[in-house]
Length: 218
Image (cartoon, rainbow, N blue to C red; front, side, top):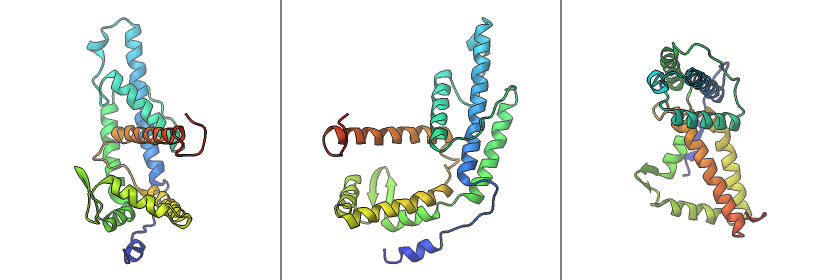
């Protein structure tokens, strides 16, 4: 741990680019959102024309109607959370497959060139955290609750609490250059962001209800 500062000194990368990584992700998702909405409009038009909806509905990249509705909601949630992006509008859906493939190739290239997760990777490596099935670490914390216990012990003093808050500020700033991996799928990423945010909200509600946190009981 004594060498962590020196290790982190080598993780900073500076890029001169017209877009930040976050702006690029937002723009990418806004395009996907525009395509989903266009497909949704097309499907509704076909329904209104009394056509055999299931026969004529293209399977598309995004799956069935319920799945599409969920993805639209998750992407909207994420873009609102991150400050949004200009919404794209599409009329012609015939070339969506080609456009999506091109977008994916461009995203992969951007990720390889611009993604900077080395800072966080260095911290995780220093802590010895490995996520292999059950949460395991080489640093002595074999389960998630043990790591929480250690953080709680540190935060029990004002100095320790401030130290954790300041460290999180640094990690928040550095996270702006970390992109969702193209391997995990962006629809899964935005879904899990929403799930995690809702989980945190429920924990806070529980804490207030049971007097663990200050504030009105919920």
